[in-house]
Image 1 (tube, rainbow, N blue to C red):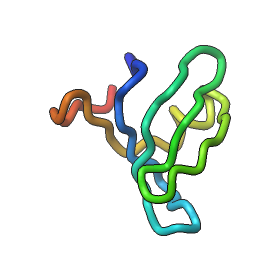
Image 2 (cartoon, rainbow, N blue to C red):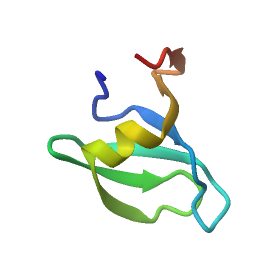
Image 3 (cartoon, rainbow, N blue to C red):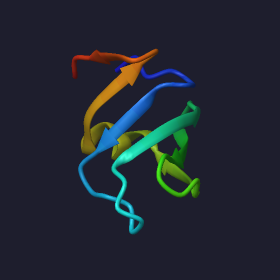
Length: 66
């Protein structure tokens, strides 16, 4: 998957605030994600994000899951 900094990802499970959208702040072996709903930041392994991703957007364009 070609997820880059600045992309917004939609994950399978929602955050306790109710949002499923996350902004990618850092990539590598793990991702730093910022919740679009409340602004909470988390560090999640790449494997876990790629397993639970349901879609993502770059510059407002929806990209296919590969």
